[in-house]
Structure formats: C-alpha cells, structure tokens
Length: 188
Image (cartoon, rainbow, N blue to C red; front, side, top):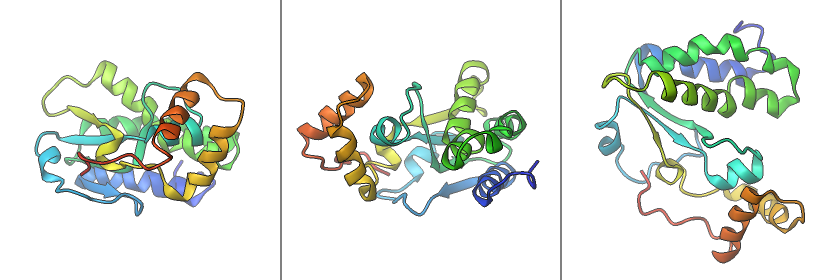
C-alpha cells in the first residue's frame, strides 16, 4: 500500500505516522512556530493534535466538519492507541489517493480529512482510558494565525458573493479585525 501511493507527500505522511507510533515524540511542519514551551501541554496529555485555523478550514479547504485537524503538529507517546488506529485506518482511505484531484487526494487519503475522520472515530469509541487519551487543542495553540502567504486568496474569497454561512462568519471576523492575524496569547 505504501509503495502504491501516487505522490511522495502521501508516503511522507505515512512515514510520519509510523515514526510517531513507534518512537513517539513531536512532529511539526516548517510553518509551525513554537512560541512558548511545549512542556505544559505535553505533560498533561499522552497525545496532542491540533485543529486547523478556521480561516484555512472554511476559506482554503471549504470544509464544514465540526473538527478539521492540523496535521502540521502532532505529539504522542510511543505506541499510542490513537496512532495505532490511524495506521489501521490507512487502508480504508488509500483509494482516495487515486480517485480525486492532486490536493484533494492528499487531504482525503493521508492528510487532514483522513486524520479528522479518525479523530472523530477515536473520540467517539476509544478516548476513555488515561493512557489512550487524545487531546485536540484549539488552533490558536499551535497555529495562531492563518498562513500569511494565503492572505490575498483569503481576501478575494471573502469579497466573493458566494459564501456559505460558515465562510461568511470567518470573513466577517476578518473584516472586523482588518485581516490581521489573530492575536496569540496562548500560543505554544
């Protein structure tokens, strides 16, 4: 299955999951900045993932699910049951890697949509034991702002006439703040 993924990013996503499952630790993409020590949150939870900023979820990905995972930051202890479930569920999402356009294929096979779906399943059925507890942190803890390289796209999107209710709420907030990135008093 690993070799059959059509893109290197699919395989990189899978490698990240395998390494975190086997060894545990912290994974952060290059666009995630550590603004405060990680110890306070990592000392409370065996596994931490974060939500994607609402500007990304609603305006970039146009995703309406209640939880949209930021796959750019993940931390866990070795052999954590959440990562075991992610690895078990890879096969059921692998077909998405070839069935949709390039970016949607990544999102739906090994990226944020895949991880979000598994978080929802884990939260409903398995998130009960102390060792297996998964914490889903708010987006402002690990990515307190929208990606500034996407600001022009976000501005254009917010000025379009065809917005959903969720997109309109995010755009209204951005208009009120003058499109300034959200402040980060609690950022890690």
